[in-house]
Amino acid sequence: MSETTAQPAAGSLPAEHRTLKPQTARCFRVDDWFRLPAATVEIRHHGTYVRTARVDAATPDSRMLWLSPEGVESRVLIDKVDGYEVWIDPEQLYYTRQRR
Image (cartoon, rainbow, N blue to C red):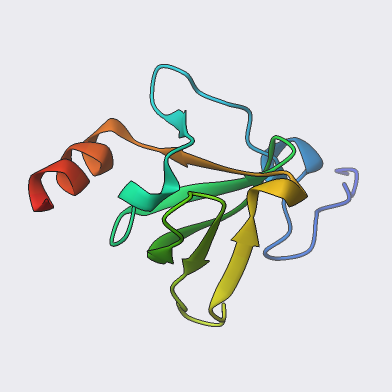
């Protein structure tokens, strides 16, 4: 007879998979948010992954930015003062520089 093992509910992930540790070889933090409209970025709050989103707009002083709505996620305004960070893949950064 085989033992029954507990399985996680469908769609749930272990805690170690719900947070994203910085991957310096793949993406890096961007502090000049005003350069990012139309780029797809990772949003982190105090180092913890929040969501991946497309940047809709940013303030000229790079303090705040709007994330475009996608799927069930609504349009969101984030502020650096609240501990948010923006991380970007080098390919996305290249794309934003080519647009300008």
